[in-house]
Length: 55
Image 1 (cartoon, rainbow, N blue to C red):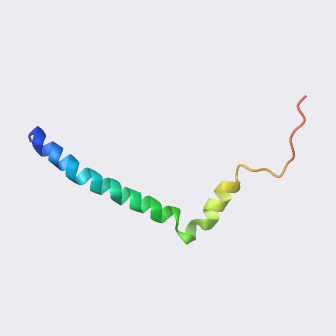
Image 2: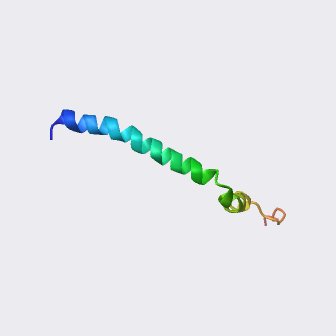
Image 3: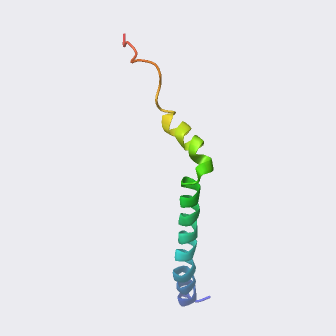
């Protein structure tokens, strides 16, 4: 395989693969089924406790 062939394959299928990956990520991020998981992850760093008293 020559450099020109490999470059052609990379320039052709690279953007197609990246666009497909982007579409999958967007679908998973905005899926209504995952709303509870996203809300749980967003609140996971929040605590119900007050600030601790440093000694």
